[in-house]
Length: 359
Image (cartoon, rainbow, N blue to C red; front, top):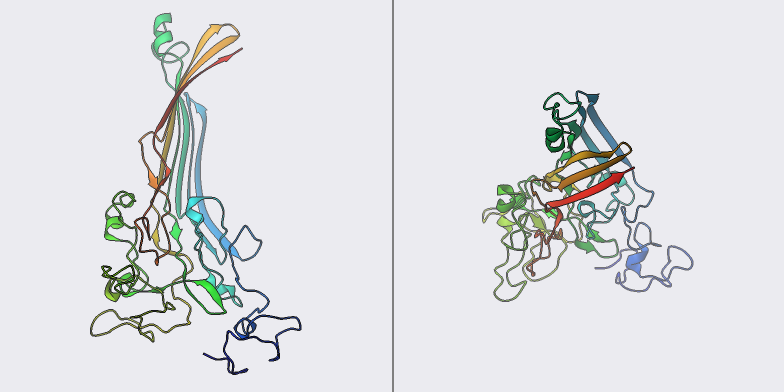
């Protein structure tokens, strides 16, 4: 491949051939980048103040102040976050070290997609209820012994439920001297970039894990023998992802759409950007379901001294949510490869009992 202006290999030196600026010392390939003074152009790293986002939401809430021993707050949010630049913040569902660069460096609108922090539905509940037993309560209020046993108890809880978050995939092989980390092309098994979930994930979102070796996602196209002589590869008809710029034996050129059968074989042109969205909502992570409950009682020791006994259960129903798995479709040679979760980011149940004197 040669540069039509200089007619020398792209990897050659630019010195003496009209460098883009006086002190440029890079290659000809580097000199024809949109911004030759820069190499790796990222759009979402390290909480930088660039990019554009829009957030729209509908919020409904209910608040009940203490009445008849009950205090309640409930809220529901329906929302959508669109952005061309997510941030790498320290939270598992937004911390994908394989996230693609800004593919459209001169037009960031091309990177516009839902954000990885998009939570379409959220429901939150918090409440405290004074059980109606014992002294100064409605029932069983005449006996000192009953008051010590059943009086003064309060139950409280915080419950949160939210949708799973969208997922981004990277990195496909880049274009020489342009981008090193770009999106994949949608393979035939993705049904037009609308279906990426594996059968195991569709059956039970928290089922696939490192213990059973099952992946969240359908696989990427892989030539037989990629991981050794015994590797059968992944046929194009079963592939949801295609690394369109990957070189090697068996990778046909150029690209043809709506392919994947013997009657319509697939091929892919090198040095092109992928057609997957930067972040896709065609598949999301598992739901977030959390319940934390407390039970407490105040014992009157003296006129100005109270002892509180409190029991708490975090993740009361012992739910768990798998942490974000490997999101690089090309990682196929390892047991903890593409789409296989290796841990959880919520759970298991934790119980604790505490006591406190107030005086």
